[in-house]
Length: 335
Image (cartoon, rainbow, N blue to C red; front, side, top):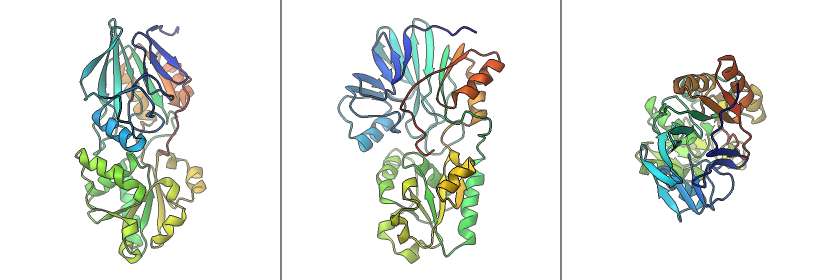
């Protein structure tokens, strides 16, 4: 099938270029005007002249990259004129706090850029909304049939069972500082874990930002302020890089856990020395990706950021127009 030609929107190696407005979506280098889908470093960068994003994403960017000048806040469901006859509407993506799909409209044509997204319920962010469009530009981080994420309640149950089985140890969970850490904490609370949860110092400011946006995380304490014996039988959360760092020696014989969709791959868990792999992802798995394309039912899907070929083949087998994009600078960020 021939690819559709939408001359007003152009995928370039460094991002999606909206030609009539000269605006970019998630550019991987500084530009004059950028639409940013969420705060992870492979999508959000400093140095833009103007940054258009949701209030939460702008707050995250200010915290992480000290970006305040040129910030333009757009709420979910709000449409703004970009110039050149193009409008943009931000729609929840369900990835992390503030994450958004961007609906672009021009001359009666509709394009949705998903950024990163998932379809599972998450107490820390607004859920993904299916949005009709002509072209659907979708991520494919876990775009292989082998990736089917288990229910998060099952993984949280594994964590709590291990905690109960070894009360003289603590469970140290490696989790990405933006999104994953807060989701693990919120899901623990939902499962009935009301004890203090201990944080690596690098986690504190982002957790407080989530709380400022109304996400309840319960009592949080810094590991650096606690005595080792006080953390026996407790949960601590740290960046993945700190799991086997000297910092972890201040904890009481920690069970090393990691929350990531990549924990489905046993070799990755072994390489990191992870004792308790927790398959918890903030990206859509194979079933979510294919279901979403079917529900959106676009005239064509553009696939990027991951395992494009398998999803492209699925589209072809299901008589759906699709093409793979060659964008650069988008990484897994320890999901």
